Image: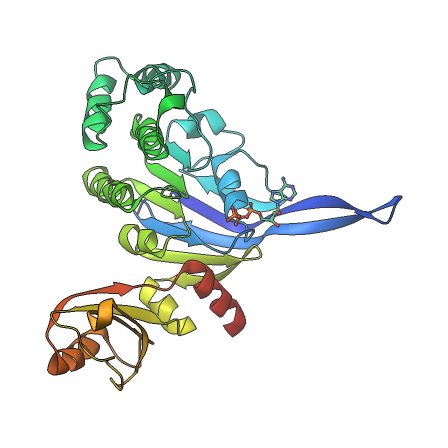
Length: 322
Ligand SMILES: Nc1ncnc2c1ncn2[C@@H]1O[C@H](COP(=O)(O)OP(=O)(O)OP(=O)(O)O)[C@@H](O)[C@H]1O
């Protein structure tokens, strides 16, 4: 078996923060941003790395990518030492930080890609094909010659993802890639990323606050809280463990009175005069299929969707349960 693309062993990083205490005194506080993390990410797999604000996600990514030196423990990424072998590592990973740009602000995407190809020393007979494939799949054609600063957020993020994938890295790291994107752009991006994984076997490490991202893009979730791992497994297991409620949204053919009394559910909203109803349920006590069956015995159901609990809520519940 291949070596894991990411291997963390008892990884720790502390920060010393000085804050004023009275008029003259300053206190020293040590923040344990990452506090003993061990983890293997198998080659070709996808991991959703989630946690509340300040849980330590960005600090972990910075150590994985060699931007930050660990206080103790070890990290290997693509078989390399991220700090000592940072240049070699840069050729094997692609990184996108949703809120920061790695493109040249005044240059069009096309020029940025040319520069990146030179930086990565990509063979001139191969990289334009890859660029064109990315322009096509990410639908960049209409703005690839516009300076980056004039792009919308959604366009820029797509441009960033193409930049991160131009050199066909074996590991793609995305930090909040869909933050601020509209529903359609998010969906397109998810479809694209799924396709890239299938085509190229790229491993994926994703941090997000969006449960749909996690569900669609990854098969494994690690939850961190105050720098420590509090969960490692699949999404259904996580939802079961915290007992977080799912909401099933039913669109009915005709308006109906609130669908009260369906075993294991609670009516949380009735909209459009009874045409749309939301029922919450705890996975394990009943299933979406059972809820749908019970609802359909009372009235004709036109459509349904299931809303997953949000990450902050899941993390809070997980924390309370440990
Ligand atoms: N350079 C720094 N100096 C001091 N403290 C820091 C520094 N970087 C991070 N921290 C602290 O370390 C902890 C973890 O921060 P980190 O940015 O890794 O969290 P995060 O999970 O990425 O949060 P978010 O979801 O808000 O981005 C926080 O308490 C943060 O304030």
